[in-house]
Amino acid sequence: MIMARRNRRWALAGRQCQGEQGLTLIELLLALAILAVLTGFLAGGLSIGRRAFEADRSSEISVQTDAAIQTVSSLIASALPVRASEANSKAGIMFDGRQDALLFVGLSEGRSMRGGPHMIRLRRSGADIVVDVLGPVAKTAIKAGGLTPTRVVALKGVRDIRFSYFGNANPARPSLWQTQWFGAERLPDLVSIQIEFEDARRNEPPRIIALRQG
Image (cartoon, rainbow, N blue to C red; front, top):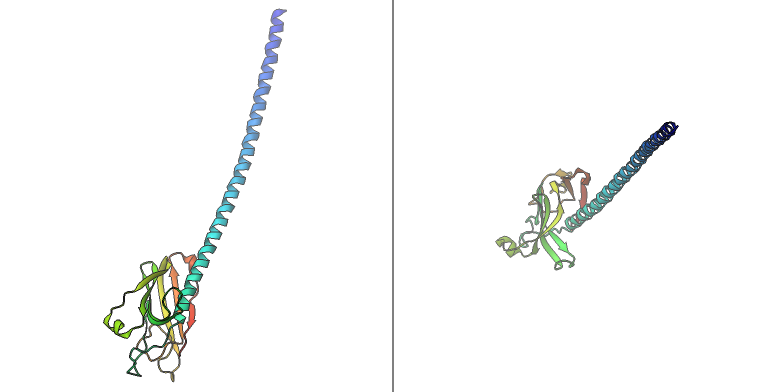
């Protein structure tokens, strides 16, 4: 009798243990499923956040790049047809345009530097576009090479820069695009500036700048 009671108790305890083990396994499976869902949501949220951050960063870089190119374009647009020699009316103007560099007399409005005409040089130095302000136009100093440039980095991360010039030194002839413009008696009608960045996402179509002729 006593043994039968003990057997029933052990069987009941065994069934309870089995039931508890099954319930624990189900809970574990549910927890794993919930964890997988939460991990998926977290990964998706991180991916969306990363894309949003990259989009904001790309937009910020694009705005900064566009502002810098616009500043350089405005500087080129201020070019003045100043002759290298006042005594010689047929002397060429101080505008030396090459495919990878540009030297000209630009007009300062007197904000960051003294107002008036200044000798300005645009060129690429390594991965930067550099603006060298040689100072107020003084022909004797220019000829003697006595000007100390003030250097400003306009753009970084540049792979290549190409200038081209539209016009003709002889107004009687048709205008066309050229890779250089120097020793002429007049400014080109247009200047094109094409900048190729190390990050191709920053590349833009060539910027066309109109120059004043007088």
